[in-house]
Length: 167
Ligand code: ADP
Image (tube, rainbow, N blue to C red):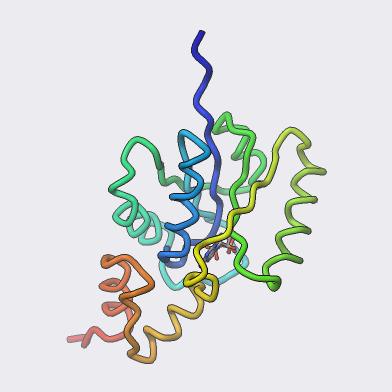
């Protein structure tokens, strides 16, 4: 008897994807057969990269995980999307106490909306605990070196965004 693959949905803005996100994906693959990295189209944040750019940067960063990680986009309620992927698990990364309150509230609200879906939190390695897409964008905007924190395609895209000389 074959059981269906265990699939977890990793939602976020991923504006842009960082090595912290990749670390969480790798950890999740120790526990699940497939990670669906689901980029939110409806975000209260005003993203620097549009949805298609965020998707192609994530795809480039995750090219080594072909068959185990799928990059998608979604609109509307996360729990509806998780059901449509035939999954029952949401993945979130926890960096510090500062993430906790918001994540706790969201996990409990999602449970109220659908009590068959569980949220699983994974912690990145310590060097990534202070890393966020927001801080990366700020460093890149000011001309700092972000190569230790983001995949090469993201580094190039940030350079292009902030420092390309327009003709
Ligand atoms: P959102 O806007 O939904 O918070 P993000 O793209 O900022 O989306 O983050 C998606 C998820 O990844 C969140 O659970 C966030 O806590 C987690 N995350 C972001 N950066 C890191 C990091 N450096 N290490 C671990 N988890 C992270």
